[in-house]
Image (cartoon, rainbow, N blue to C red; front, top):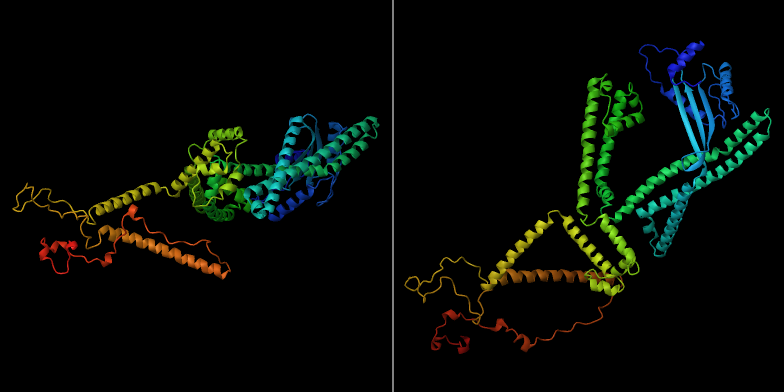
Length: 631
């Protein structure tokens, strides 16, 4: 008999006059000892080997009995009662297991017919508890047409991916880039997809062979049962039962492995989808957010893990002796995770004993892990999401991407692949700025739509790089331009004033010799502008002294540094045995054209400068040695 719980078993024992479970003493702990738990796990593992496969003795005898399909339910119940009356089921029975097969000829799953193996094990504890383990393993016997079509598409896609991966590896090996190619994350994910895909096909093939063998055996069984007499029917069915059980041991385990392979395969496909979305800016926001903040998140996760394990151990020590949820480290780890994610805990029950310590543990756990670290992790994710979102252009939408794909399909004959573009564009010198004309000269067959798309995309990327480098860069650039414009304006004013800084005009009127206002024959209060046709100035102008000479000296320092670097490079090349020349000689530049550029400049070092303001107007009163042309 199968009891729903311990109370039903107690009622049955009372009605049958069997001794009930021993009552525990008052105050005794309900927890089983660690040795009892280990012994229970050992017995369950031994029992789960199966009565039909490996009958084992666990503290007594183990009985097995096959029940054929032809036996009606009344005969089965009579047989079970005979076990209870005999030595098979007694008050000291520890285990009771049932193994059977179910053949379903009308299934709504991917197979029209399925064969399911069921193993139900019961354990009866000395305290009256009933423990149950159930194992189900299903093998498809006949696939539907829709499932076969999906399987065919899966095989085609897997073969294509395998061939492309092998070709990529061969080309990379020819180019001496095999290690770089195979260590890429996308290629590693593709390799995992190929491995699990072929493992799934292998398991499906084993199931198909087992299903074919079972269908053949089932037909033989029906033919033999139709011709056997009633006296030998039970023996024939028993033989066929053991044969089917032995034949399906391997396929059943393969079906269990198939479930694991399919689960892992789906997880890897999800990861491959995230890798594939990196080609579109908006679809790649999730993956780029995680990658952008991976370093910070890993450091925060390390801190979170240390604090979390500390609270798990504390909760296990503090509350494990009276709470089943915290009785072991594994259970305490799961219960603390439940508090973090669900924010639910049994506060009243946890604070029944050691209220101050339990309340302190709960409050600090919620504050440190739930409110601080979890929200800090969310804040990091939001911050990285904002940074990644700012790098995405507004026109990078799914509709724009779809139109671009349609344009590429329409212009497939003249569309240049990315590989060909990169192969030729990489040959352009970094100092040269490629233009549409230069790209068209290299690719005469390129379409105008693709050319405009390339340059518009490059312009957007350049703008995003400049704006994302520093969020305040635009205002800084504008401020720098304003400062430079002010310096340029001051320099132009200094040059227009012959090197003299502008002075504020304190007198806007003319003053005559007598001090009367309004006289046209008066002198200006400010100094007259120097005559261009007059002698050269005695001192260097301000713009020459502060602007031009400083710039020339900086340029001279830069050229000197370049010369020193070239000399060092020449020495290093000479030490390695590399010598050569530029292949041409620099000729001396010709003298400038006098008719076009005017006479050559005069050597001012040989000119005697005379202060003309002190020379009298009368030539006869000039000092000796001064010619008439000096004036």
